[in-house]
Amino acid sequence: EVLVVESGGGLVQAGGSLRLSCAASGFTSDDYAIGWFRQAPGKEREGLACIMSEDGRAYYADSVEGRFTISTDNYKNTVYLDMNSLKPEDTPVYYCALDLFPLGLWSAPHEYDYWGQGTQVTVSS
Image (cartoon, rainbow, N blue to C red; front, side, top):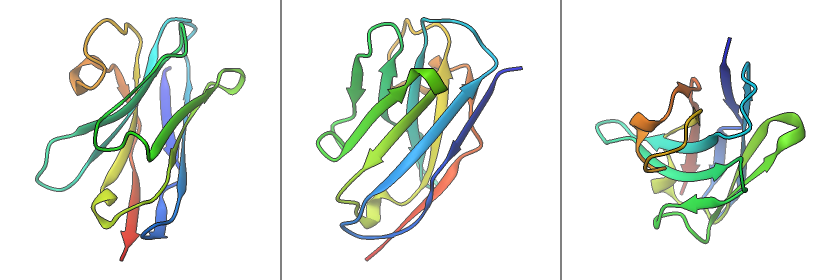
């Protein structure tokens, strides 16, 4: 059974930092991608960052590049999203997703096969 579980959400002041974690299990492929998304009420799901297991290449959305960093711990099958200089507009639910066949556009939600339950991030002004 493939499971994707994200954690680390919570309340943080504007300008602060937060680390989100994503643990993926139940698969053996060495060629996959894990992406971070967020979605605010009434808005489309937004791709934030993605990391490829094959070569470690990372991709970022323009909206977060320079503030957010994606990294991985392959031994633990864990991917992190380090968020810095947080703003109130960074408040939505954050999701981690697993793409077992990373062939398409990294930021497209439909490319991903499994999703976590989401973790809420709230940035106070």
